[in-house]
Amino acid sequence: MPAFWQPQRRRPNIVFVLLDDLRHDSLGCTGHPFARTPQIDRIAREGARFRNFFTVVPLCSPSRASFLTGLYPHTHRIINNDKHGLAEISHTLVTWPRLLRESGYETAFIGKWHMGFDDTRRPGFDHWISFRAQGLYIDPVVNIDDRREQLRGYMTDFLNERAARFIQRPRRTPFAMVVAHKAVHYPYLPAPRHEALYADVRYTPPAPQPGDLEGKPALTRKVEERIDVLKLEDSTPEPGEPRRGRPRDPDSVVRDQLRCLASVDDGIGQIFEALRKTGELDRTVFIFTGDNGYLMGEHGQFDQKRWAYEDSLRIPFLVRYPELVKPGSQPSAMGLNVDLAPTLLELGGVKWSERMHGSSLVPVLRDPGTKGRTAFTAEYYPEKLSNRVPEWKAIRTERWKYIRYEGSGLDELYDLDTDPQEIRNRINDPAESATLAGLRSELDRLLAASR
Image (tube, rainbow, N blue to C red; front, side, top):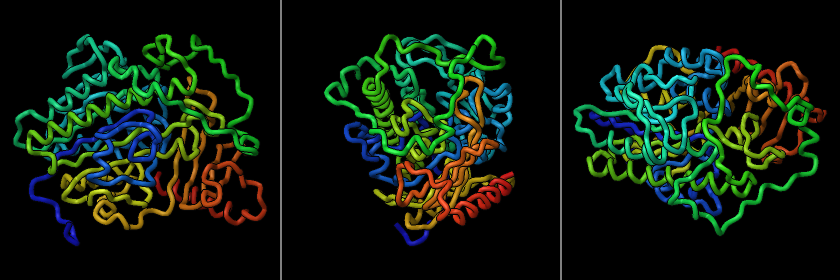
């Protein structure tokens, strides 16, 4: 690769694959002990795997909006999964596919929109395939270019097939495609062909650590768990289908998640093949990621997200683009989901005058040793259907994490160098009073800067 990078005259195609509730370490290339993801791993092998990539909000709807707009939830206003008016707000979002389309790209959205219950086409997409809310794994009803169809079969396979078909359409312009899978979200229903996959392996949740929960008063506080859903207004029911009698123990859930992931991996192979057949493989920016992390036993939380802990904020992020990205590179700079929009707009040659909170990752992709940001903020806003987690704001630096639970006094402070599992809360440690004061000040400064 040359010492400097100049974009090719022909603007690249873009394939952006987004999964739901995918842990950062669920892939073979990110160190999972038994997950088989050869096609996904190929993206990392032939491109870049970010070692420190995060979402600024560990929840589906707001994270998806941040990926598409480059903005924090407090600005794009998709703040949670059940706020009234999410669908209406999402019709107003200025997204990178919308801007690319205005500049001459052919665009497609295929999969889970999940910002409100509405499945109708959003601005900026020439081709639209989606479904209401969470959608179904089995026999879904799908909106295909403004016509609803009752399908037979497995949702992931349908989305994979339509993604490959879109790539192979004849065209004279570059294309940008979002493939947003329902997988690997609850209720974790695998395709029949993968039922026996991982039958010979077992998952053991992390063992409880002494002193862990004692330092997490927000996590362990008494909350009325039972919600009278009949009294809730403006909230959409989830999930759209049951677990269908499948076991709910951790071992069964993890294996079913990975079985769902196997169908996604099949689809990545189909996309690779479609790009090869059309001669567009090396002219395409191919990105794979997830909308948020997942807690699978850490801090006593199983099958959960929403908290500011590492396994909830951290997500996988893989990029293949031979013209720019050296094969097998592993950037260590902290990347965020709000960085996607400015990155793809730069690669697509689009200049956008309005401010975005993210920064282009092109310099990091060009040179994996590039130093990025030294700190970022994350946030969460309460939901009607999930009253367990209070509102919080957090700042994470290369060494420290400070979590502020708004108005509660239940804050947490962790030294990630000495305590990467976030076991010991240092909030009341006199030796760290100066560190805490600095983090509080920096959190306020960064929040103010993003208003």
